[in-house]
Image (cartoon, rainbow, N blue to C red; front, top):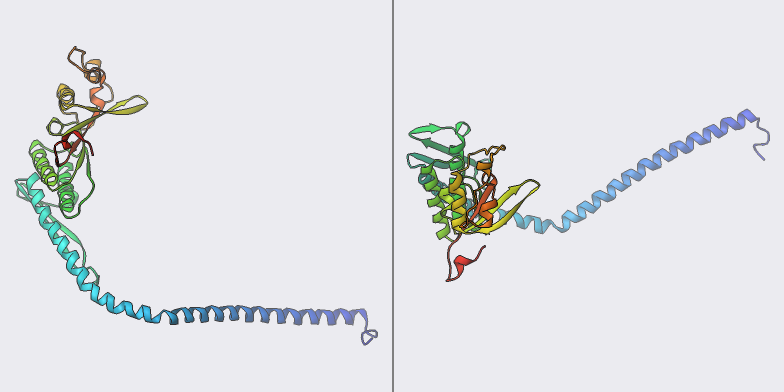
Length: 286
């Protein structure tokens, strides 16, 4: 009844003012709602941390007690690895010396070190790791692997064609290191084309790469040596173009079907070396 005397323009003006006031109230309520949500979230976090305060505080004495234990045992293990690294490096590089040192640091309060340093000598000359040849890098890596194996037992160790860049002297050192690890109870799966290692494998499996796929089958040590010796040690990068005389073995009554059909340049041998435990162990694979 009070609005009946107002003109249309006045009604429109009052409606605009009411709408503006409602928008202001809406904005205020929205801010208040967000602030309330943040307050509830904060209170929930406060309750959570308050309820777990005792547990969190109990961690600090335990952490302080564990720090010396961790430092002692980790440092002891690393020192053992460093000593073994020098031993295995000497096996493969008789005229050289490899030293692994722990780099101590006070920045890490738990471990107390931030890395290792290698001092490598080949033939009386100290070499930087970045400037080593492929063969030198390989023996450095192998010495590290054997040092770690001696500290941590594993199911088996796979060495995939690690002999390609090694001289005969270093191959002999590698096999000595392998024998040492086998005596400790480790098992090795080795892929190789090299007659030196093929001859010393306990079990032999031949992988034949053919067009469209590959196949694997067990072979005797005699078969493995026959195939390897027929072509000599395979080059580091086998040629993809093979003549008939290079790619197959001439058939003879004494050869097995595998020997007659094997493509020599594309045959890799898997050797298994393991510690013999019991009478029939030599007849079993891993």
